[in-house]
Image 1: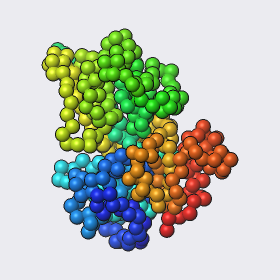
Image 2: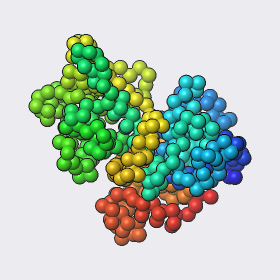
Image 3: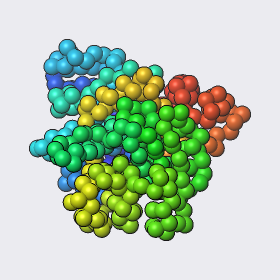
Image 4: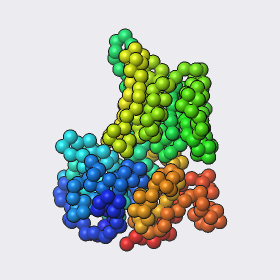
Length: 411
C-alpha cells in the first residue's frame, strides 16, 4: 500500500512524498490518518534535524514521518492484537512512549508512522506500552487534540504540595488555590485554562497573562466561568516589578499556589519564583530552545518556605486516555484553539513557518490537498464561512465533514 507523507530528511528539509509501505507484521497495525494538529515541537524538530534527540542520525538516508498529534481509523490488525483492536475502529496515539532504551517516538523517529501521512504502520511497541487508545469522540480533530491535552493533564498532575510538618507530598495542583498561567493565550495555555475550569482540580482564582490584548479579549470571551474567578491580564510594557505588583493585587497582595510558565524567558522565571506562595509550585511548561537555559531563583524560599519546581515534557498513556474521555464527554471544547486548517500539501511549509504565522493550532487533514485557511478570514458568504458562522467562528464536526466531502484527495 502507498502512503503520501510529510517526511524529514534533515535540518529544515521537509518533503511531501509518496512511498510504498511494507506488509504489516503479525504484531503491527495498518491505519489511516484523518487529522493531525501541529505542535511547536515539530518546528523545533524541523530546525534541528539530526541534532534533535528524538531523531535517528541518518535522516538523509532514512527519513522519518512528521506529526505526533493525530487521529484516524484502523484498517488492518496483526494477529497479536486482534483481541484488543479491530478494523474500522477510531484511534488516537500517545506518542510519548516513555521507554528507557530509546528516545524514538512516533512523529519524530519512525519511517512509517507520523500524523502527516495518509496511511501508517503502527509498530508493536505502541500497543505494548498502552499508547494506542480507542477514541469515541464525534470528530477526528478532537482526537488529534487529545495529545496536547494529555500534556496539560500531565503537568497538572506533576505539581505537588508538601505538608510542612510531615513532609508528605500531595500530588496535583492545589484544589481551591490561586493559579497563574503566564503567557497563557497560546494554544497550550488555552488548553490549560480549559482543563483548570472544567477538569477535576479547579482552582479558586485563575490569572492568565499575555501582552496581546486581542488574544486576551478572545480568551476572555471563549473561557467564562461561574465557578472560578478568572482574570485575563495584559502585562505589555510593565517592568518586572510592576508585573509583580499588578499580579499580586488579584490575590490580596499574596502570591500563587501554582504557576505555569508557557514561555521560556529567564527574567520571567525569576518573576514567577517571586510570586510563589509558601509551598507554591512553579512549572516550566514551555520547552527551552537551548540546553543552557538558566534563571535566578530564591533558595531561601526553597529552604524555609518550601517553594518547589517541576517540568514536564509530553503526557502518558493514562493522560491521553483521560483527555480522550474528557473530550468525548464534551467537558473540554478543544475547537477553541484551532485557528488554521490545511491539506497535507501545505503541512511542510506551515510547520516551518509556525512562529511567523502565529495564531493557535494548525489542523492538517492528512488525506486532503488544499492550501492553508485562516478561519478568521474565511469569506462569510462561502459554504465554509456559513458553517463557521453557525458555530460562533469555531471549528466543528460540521466543518470537518465539509472538508472531507469537498476538498480533493492528496493522492
